[in-house]
Image (cartoon, rainbow, N blue to C red; front, side, top):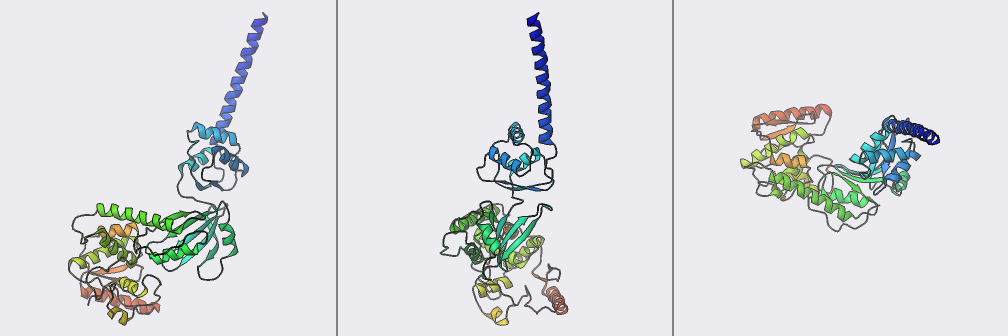
Length: 394
């Protein structure tokens, strides 16, 4: 009788424990998958090599999750406990633990946090300090500095010394190698002296993550390696009959296309004009190459070309030389390289600005001269200085 009572009590206790365990599991699932505790957007920052335990405790401390143990258990159940990716990720208000696990294990570009961005632009280089507004989730500029314009703003200097700041370089399409080197030199958190400017066109426009104390020459080598890979891929996929003997010639053409238009959808058309001219033995007659011969890629020419500059023979004056110039005139992106190797099939031989940011394309000199006249009238109406017409044949 006694043993029967003990067994009955034990069975009852076991049932109670099972019910409690089931309730606890159900509660944990709801906690893991349900809305999180944060009423505002949260920037979740994952350090290189961070453990799941450290990340879960960090998230609990900043109020992004309600329970560090449930977060770890859920990540383990999803088989993602070892998949943490370095970066800073913006989580929306009330993001669930499940959402957070999915995001921090998927990786991708960082979307929040404090960052110092070295921007290599066509017209100027700038260094920006940006941070995330937790209410809007948008980046806001906190400080800006143009190299050579005076001392760096104090917030920018202070941010560079923080352990959690993200450092990056954004290289625009169409900048010169000299501009890239100048930007790297202005990034005083980097090390290493650059003894020689890399070959023009050899650096890939892209976003590059930087590290405090990183070597400038190693960064340039990474840029060059990326560009070489892009050029090799696009050259291998080129169609038959392109008027280039080497990948380097295609790179020269791509740099001209890059400098001639800021509209992505125009690149294949612009490339078609130059390819048509090469095939017909016509001179390219493109202003950006003449400008490069004047500046050597080490300045922005804030004026139109002078007649004397158009008349002066140089290796880059395509009004005076046949064929391509000897080197690229900038660093083209993949899209421009692809356009140079895959131009549209047109019979265009000329183009000129049309006042909309794009260009008017023409088949004959008569059509082109009419388009030039329309552009001159637009310049006059807008009070712009008259510039030399682009793509006007001799």
